[in-house]
Image 1 (cartoon, rainbow, N blue to C red):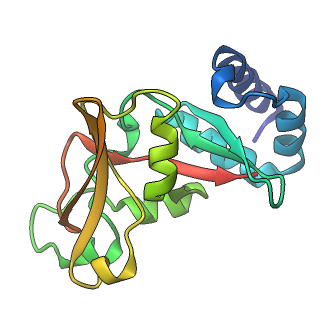
Image 2 (cartoon, rainbow, N blue to C red; image 1 turned 135 degrees about the horizontal axis):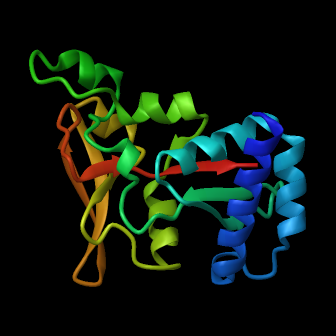
Length: 181
């Protein structure tokens, strides 16, 4: 990442961090920035989250290793990551009307992973997300082995977890990523 692009991204992240202090009470931007600057691959991943509409922000810090947890905090599922089936196997299984890719592969290319159900629910404690869209989440192997995949949204003041065929895709379904730095 070139210096002007890096500085622009860091300024944007700092501004978002400062506007939403309730997401990371007790944390200092200087500590987050130092960790990002020391880890160029992580900065690239956060940049990819931002470029695809994710509005990444810190939503916690792992007490076991001190890593900051970045998550997509856009109000709706990131617009640059919608209309994707769940994974490569699902994409390969589609015979016609294939989507442009899969959520799991796109996340991996960005250097992030899909949110777990627990992290999705934790995110929803910080605001109301996916009130008009939905997001694929990490799916347990036993569900995936039967052809399904899980997604979540927020409706009627509640967080719902649903299932769908992994090969399905919708214009209003994307995925939220997480990155630990």
